[in-house]
Image (cartoon, rainbow, N blue to C red; front, top):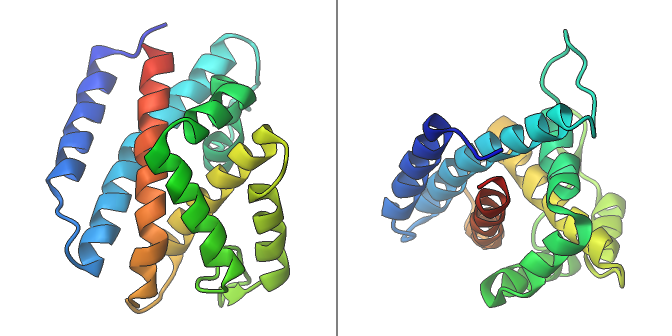
Length: 190
């Protein structure tokens, strides 16, 4: 089933807004990432509903939408593990963005997976994420990329941090990956 005209218009509007944001300061990186994530959110919701209609997953009728699961797991199921990995690795900009993600964790430049209400760093979990990003299994790598992006989204939206220059370094690869995810989802949903 193709996306509705309304959904297509929604995605077009948000992509247009994102593309108007010049990446010239830290605030602009936040703005573009969040703007792109709105479009990605709508598309992973559509993918989730497609999986549900096909009987591939079951959504509990009176439960909240499984946002984290949709963004990190159902996208993989919808696009296919192998296809998603190829989608990331065959695009030079996205492949470079994933390498940047690995470097950020390896060099301890940014804490990705945080714990507790104080959002304390969890180096052990970050190292596990890095190991998944470096896995020989393409599907594990692809899932780790989605976990990285979703974690940054959660940290950005739910955190109470001051602006720090390193944040642009973590947002830049996330912007590239989310842009690629949108393209892959649009292609599959069309």
